Image (cartoon, rainbow, N blue to C red; front, side, top):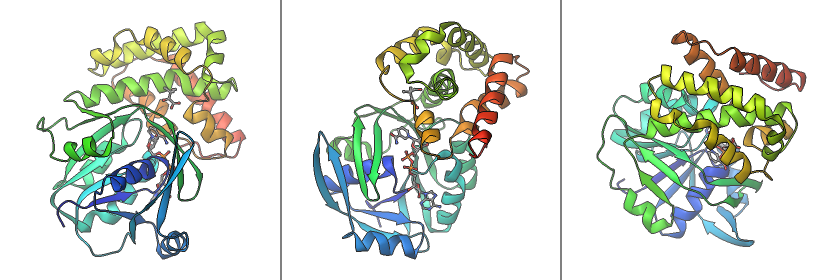
Amino acid sequence: MPGIWHILGAGSLGNLWATRLARAGVPMRLVLRNAERLADYQAHGSSLTLVENGMARQVFIAAQTLDNPEPIERLLVACKAYDAEQAVAQLAPRLAENAEVILLQNGLGSQDSVAARLPHARCIFASSTEGAFRESDWRVVFAGHGYTWLGDASHPAPPSFLKTLDDSGIPHEWTPDIVTRLWRKLALNCAINPLTVLHDCRNGGLLEHHCEVATLCAELTVLLECCGQPAAALDLHSEVLRVIQATAANYSSMYQDVANGRRTEISHLLGYACVAASRHQCPVPHLQHLHKRLITHLASKGLRTD
Ligand code: NAD
Ligand code: KPL
């Protein structure tokens, strides 16, 4: 069915995208995990609520389960990085030849795993600085305006759906350097997020741990260069300090996951960086030590360490 967007992952970011697209009249389906979840959605009036600048707006969106037979031409994957591959595998038989699959996951690793499962689809990677959280099921709060970069490292031509994003008011840019952007964001997240968890502080609290941040940035810079990502390494330390200052009052996403007893995306952030360092024989003792400390901390809270 040309033109229809299927949204897999009806969580914070998925619902932020779904409500804005639906508001602009874009035909779409939420793809829910099972019949129970679909029944719950229908009992809530088959609608999502978007809260933006304190104003709540209800948007009606059709939904279906993973095993619905409808073919999929365009799929937005908004699951966590650790769920993306398995969730997409469940939908793979429904994907049309040359379907477009947009991957919103943070960190690295999940995008390649998904792409390997879908050799006949066009996988488009995304990196977003927008912020959203779920106030309750089916109700999402637009918490931070930002930008989404999209790109396909193997095909530079932009897809036709960018016009739909314009019409839906989703700020975005098409970039051939999406992998560089994802590496840069991963490095920022590795320098900030684990330390906020271990020091139990807001991002601004890291200004009191200046030396630790500087040491991690120095190692991350060398790692990015070893991994063939020199552009992602440029002025990393200054950028990390800028982000710490600009988001001083915020709790990092990893801090919030831990505080709420949720699984973190550690394997696709710090874990991915440490594995890449071993593969390139790049010494990163402080990053490895940080990874071990974070794993110990997560385990002490009864949280998953992968
Ligand atoms: P979330 O946990 O709020 O939502 C994920 C949703 O996916 C959940 O509703 C979950 O039930 C669903 N899901 C998982 N497996 C599924 C399956 N097999 N079938 C159907 N549904 C399934 O997560 P989020 O905060 O929206 O984050 C999604 C991704 O976007 C993450 O990688 C995150 O790092 C990234 N991101 C989030 C934000 C944000 O502000 N929330 C900002 C930038 C990037
Ligand atoms: O992206 C972030 C996060 O919290 O995940 C920032 C604000 C950059 C901190 O690392």
